[in-house]
Length: 169
Image (cartoon, rainbow, N blue to C red; front, top):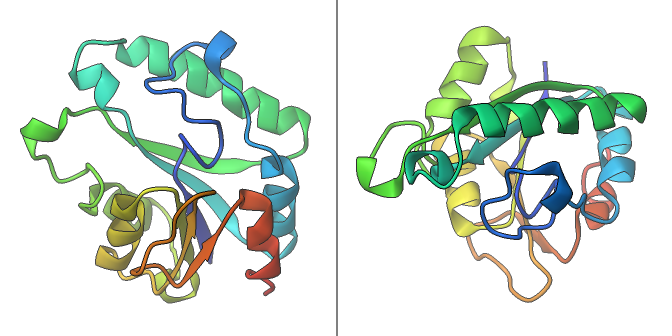
């Protein structure tokens, strides 16, 4: 199976820092159209997200799970299926194996699903997202940021909707 790994904050939703309530969750422009495009090409969608707010005590794992359930319901209402959401709940100083740019979340996905990493993509808005994809063996990476580029990414674009001009098969 070929997959597209997506960061959450900054790719799926606008990054308002430590978003854990649906009232503060705002989908990024073009995200639904982009994800429909990926699914039409036969990709399975995975979200890989650092959620250090849990480890820092800003919100609970239950808060995150409640928001994730709501988000997935919103996708389902638009006929979009996210295969699975992986997250790292650790604070950066814990130096765990799952926090991007480490590859623990990608390894879990590969253990649970037969993913063709070489024909998969990583889409993120931080250099650590791109580095995590590279570290996991994903050759195709897209950095999404309105004001900067990432030299380590295969491509840099200004919005998630721009990715449909890159991922075509």
